[in-house]
Image 1 (cartoon, rainbow, N blue to C red):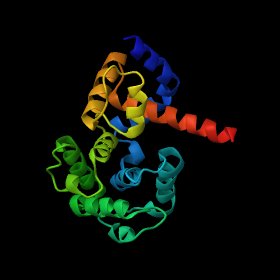
Image 2 (cartoon, helix red, strand yellow; image 1 turned 180 degrees about the vertical axis):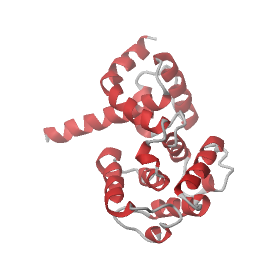
Image 3 (cartoon, rainbow, N blue to C red; image 1 turned 60 degrees about the vertical axis):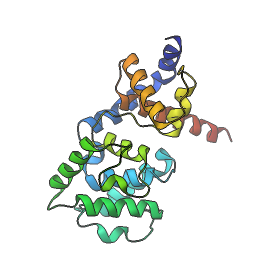
Image 4 (tube, rainbow, N blue to C red; image 1 turned 135 degrees about the horizontal axis):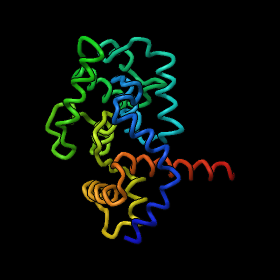
Amino acid sequence: MENFEALRNAIAPYLPEARSYATACFEGKRWGGKSLLIILDTALTSTGFSYFSFVEPRVRRFERELLDGLTLSSSHNLFLQRSWYCVSDRCALIMLSAINRFSSRDEHSEREKLIKWARNADPFRRDDPFSKTKGLGVFSIQYLRGQLGLDVPIPDRSVRKFLSAYYPSRLDTPSDVMRAIDEVSSTLGITRLELVWAIWIRADSANRSKLAAL
């Protein structure tokens, strides 16, 4: 419990901002609720680039310059090759797979399909067609489910590294990390998404401080 109190103190300064991200997800307001932007965010995040300095700014630029009424069904040609908003083959594969699976007559219908997928997806079995997409691992599936409003544990490397300093058991697998997120968030009385976002924001703040010192 002492370790968890130390953990609480470590993330406390970042919880207000983390809560704003989590609340946007829970209320269906993340990226304005636009399925295309939510999946693009996930596809870029899966490439391993820094979220706050690379992924989020790219999605915001796409929103400003290209979105303008686009839905999944009308964006197919944009993702046939690499570009500044789709920087790798992995990104393109995820986008095209989502377009093929979730395109519908309008944005509302596409979002309904996505949310239905999120509620039923299993990141370990990966037994639905979209979850089998090359490049979608446990982290990416959980991340997308979280962006769509589910309070799920998201086991990425920075979360694992941070929790390992406080958690009493080894965190060797994604399952271990997810279990730790469940326990820590419950103990601290916050949601899983609040915990994960606070860890990410803390890590980004530390990176910015290091760069400023150079």
